[in-house]
Each structure stands twice: as C-alpha cells, then as structure tokens.
Amino acid sequence: MFKDRERSTAKELRSSQYAGGSLLRWKRAMSFTVGKGQLEEPVELLRIALDERVFVKLKGDRELVGTLHAYDQHLNLIISDAEETLQKAELDEETYEQIVRQERRKLQLVYVRGDTVFLVSPLLRHTGTFL
Image (cartoon, rainbow, N blue to C red):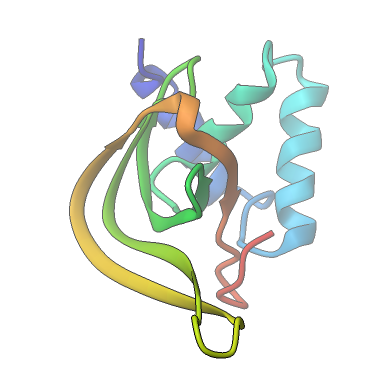
C-alpha cells in the first residue's frame, strides 16, 4: 500500500519551520517526527521526501535523480522527471586500462522495484546536492 495518505503530513513538515531544505532543518524534521512517535519503521522517513527531488542508487551501477511521488514498505518507488545514469566499465585491449563511460537518459515516469534499491537520499534545496 502506497503512503499517499501520509502525503499531507509530509507537506506539513516541509512547509513548517523544520523543513526549509538545509541539512540542519532536515535533521530537525527527523527528530521532530521521531520525537512525536509518528515513525514506526525506518522506511517511513521517505514520507518527508514525498514530492521532493531524490537521488536513488540502484543495482547494476545505475543511479536515478527525480521527484519521489510514492513508495511502499518494499521500497518500490514511483519517480517522475527522472534522469538515469548508467556507468559502464570497459577494458582497453591495447593498454589494459579500465575505461568508465556514462550513459544518461531522461524518463518522464518510472516505477523502481524495491529489491534493486541501495540508497535513497533527498536533495538539499539550497545547495542542490544530496545528503
């Protein structure tokens, strides 16, 4: 079951004094939520990142950056306006050096199966970097 019912809570946290986009405010939002006893599982920390830009590291040297719209307890994700980066390592036959190439593609809407997810990190608004 996706956490759409908790979307209002995430929006309240983002619009409150606790979630202005800085690392300090993100940590305050986490402690605020945990302190109130609203979190039952670690995966519920994702509700704060709903409708925000996230970085997702996947199996197979794949990475996604996009807007998180929904998730479930298996870490299945719905992400829109995503950019996928795939890194391929090749061996040069003449010099025996490893050559790393990146392929990028844009995806409008993507469903990410939870068993492929290694890491999910929110984008910090003020710096444009990830936690």
